[in-house]
Image (cartoon, rainbow, N blue to C red; front, side, top):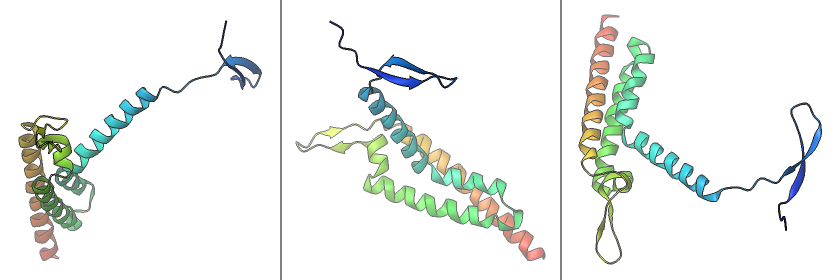
Length: 139
């Protein structure tokens, strides 16, 4: 006995046809949402680098905004690592109710790479601040 439900849909040319009803795959959506969440968390945790890269699109006399932004986001990064907000979810893990440490989604050793990337971003931001200061002083 066929229990497939059928519905009418328009095809490419506008003609109606009877097709099987599509069912949503909830597991697939959960996997996609987890992937998006991990990527979003990685972007948040590496904000000093991304903010510094925005300086390349700015006027040279206004690049100090990117430098200030990269320093402020680096401060957020240090607070995040200490409080284990996003970094706890990704790298450090958390303590469960029975006192055992659960690992994060990624290994803790990758946090050193994030430190390096963010340090490079802050160095670029400081260079932008110096460049903007020197150019504005000349005017």
